[in-house]
Every structure is written in structure tokens, then in C-alpha cells.
Length: 478
Image 1 (cartoon, rainbow, N blue to C red):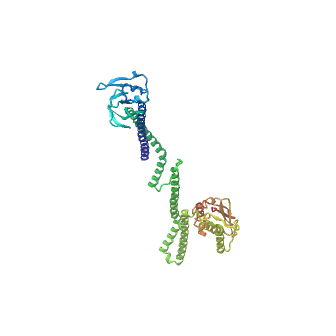
Image 2 (tube, one colour):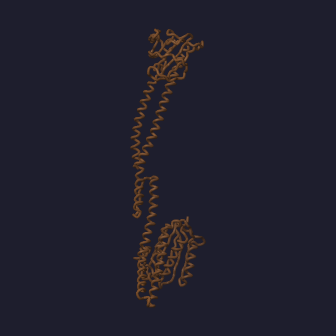
Image 3 (cartoon, one colour):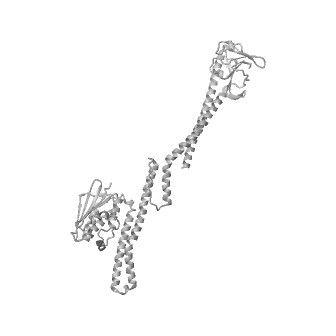
């Protein structure tokens, strides 16, 4: 989390630094360009005024062409050779007072300046400003000839030097301001980065902690991660919860399988061990005892085989997600199974009533799973018929979303106190009767597992001595 926070802060800081650098350079460039353009504009304005002269410019006639009326505004001063030079701190041309403007006669002698400064006339004649140092200050200089508009003759020279002191002052103030903003941005980015990382990475840290705990203690009970951030992190947490929930179901199923096997096999194994010990001691010499022990052992082995087969069936069903999207015509499956049971149990009257007359009833279930569930229900109806009427009825109907298979009989029925437990593993309602029949107590548990896989349901109503009715519901095919 700290790494992400630092990276986020660094990224924001770098972005702002780039923005500040670009802003600074662009501002400096535009300001400098403005200075150069203004210098050229003012030089051209003054030169245009001076070009009205038809005679050579002198300190005597210069005031006629400059934009002021009172000659006494010009202050005379003298150069090193004693030549009189007129100067003025400002004249009527906008922008001229901020720069050194000097006018020279055709011989190159200075005859006018805006400031008390002696700038040698440059040999280069160009309207394009050039950078140079004068009086300890860096600035742009422009030197150009002044030609009479009427005669076309050169009447003098104009030279202007624009100090960049103001530009450097503004640039330095701008740089100071931007550095202060940069420092504030760094502080702001640090705070925002920390707050953002706290807000966005807290759910991730929670998810990471849960994953680390699962990795360290994989056998512990899975704890759901509750994240309500409303973003992709919440979706990731939901995926993790679903994945871990399924994994936990598999782990619990394996634990339950091992526990059930060890518990349910304890009795038949004890019986086997007892008979084998009996035979080892003296039973093998007694033919009658030998036959009885072998028969009893054989029956216990059959029970164990049937039990293990049913338990493996449940374990396999719990990992049957790949079959969830299979479609099956239930009418065809019921007709086939009913016909098989009629053939095997000819003393029973088995009826089939379908509300899907003339068309098929497709359900969202794998065919083998549906037939496995129906076989268990029919087999139980046969086993627990007792001495009552040997009648079984299979009904196929539907509601808005599901297709319901009902198997009813006129058998022994189930006690009311046993009904809530009939779908539990290894539960036997009539234990004495189950010993005679040889049931494992897993059949109805298998049906419940199948129903859960396909988002269906299974229920039972029963009355002792009158029979039972089991309903197995699965979704319609889409």
C-alpha cells in the first residue's frame, strides 16, 4: 500500500512538474517575443516619422520629426568630443521611454538619445533584433537606416537598445512563484496520494489479508470478505468469495466423505473381523458355522460395496458443475424407466401420468442425473411397499419455471418426526426394516445433491400406513 501511495504521489508530482516546466518556458518565450515585437514596432514608428525629412537629420531639426511640440523639453548634453546631443526622458511615441533610442546623422554622430547613454553605432543594419550586452545589461539592439520618403536618400540612422532587465525580473518572479506552486503541489500530491491509497487500497489490503490467511491456514474455515467499494475491487472480492466458497464446499465434501466412510464402515468391518476371528479360532472346523460366517461376511461386503458406491456417487455429483447446462426430455426418460420397473416388478401396478401430451418436456438437467434420481425414488417405492397395495404412480407436470416429477405410493409411509431428516446422509426411518432391505441411507441424500446442483428442489409428504409422495423439481430448459 505504501509503495502504491508513493508511486501515485510521484506520478502526480512528475505530471505537475512537466506542466510547470512547459508553462514556465512557454511564458518566457511569449514574453520575450512580445518584447522583441514591441521593439521592432516602436523602431518602425520612429523611423517612419523621421523619414518625413528631406534633409539630413541634425540636432537642430530633429525635433520637427519627433512627436512633441516644445523644443525646450530636449536637454542638451555633450559627448567626449564636445558635440552637443539632444536628450529626452520621454516623447510622445508610446513605448519609447522604456528603451534607449538614439538617432545619428549620416556621418554616424549621435544627435539624439532618450537617455544619457552613449551607445556606439553598430555597423550591422538590420530590423531583426540581436542580443548584446551594454552597460552591464543584456538586451536587444536594432539598427536601421533612415531614408527620406521623398528623395530616397539616407538622412540618418536610428538605433534602439531594449534592456531585458524587466523581462528577467518578471521571469525570476514567475520562476519563484512556480517553485512555490511546485512545493505546494508536492505536499498536496502527498496528502491526496495517501488519502487515495487509503480509500482505494484498503479493500485490496483486506482482500490480500484474507488470501494470505487462506494460504497460511488452508484448512481453516473460509471467511467471506465483505467489501462494499462499488468498483472493480468489489467485483474481484465477489469472484474470490465465490471461488473460495466452492473450494470450501469441495474440502468440506472430502472431509464429510472421509468421516462418513470411517463411521459407516466401522460396523460392517467389525462384523467381518468378528467372523474371521471366529473362523480362525474354531469355526473353520464346523461346516455349519463356516457357512454362516461366510454368508454373513458376504452380506457385509455387499453392504460396504453399495455404501461406497453411493458415497462416491454423491462425491462425484458435488463436482458436476460441467453438466449444469445439459438439457433432457423428461417424458422420454420417465417412460423408459417406468417400463423397466414394470418388467422387473411385475407384481406392482406402475402408472405414468404426463401433462405434456403431444410434446416434449425439456428440463435443465443432465439425463443420467435425472434418471439416477428417479430410479432411487422408484426403487424406494418398491422396497417400502410392505404388504399394502403395490401401486406406484409417476406424474410429470410443470409450473411457471420448473418441471415437477412426483412419485407416490401406497406403502409403509414415514413417521412425522422422521420426515425432516429423511434427506440426511445415512438416515434410516425404519432401522429394522432397513436391515432387512439392506438400504444405505444415502439414496435420498443423492437426490437432494442433484436438486441443489441444478437449482431445483425435492420434498416429501407421507402418512404412516398410507404411503408417501416425493416431488423432485428441476428448472425448465431455456
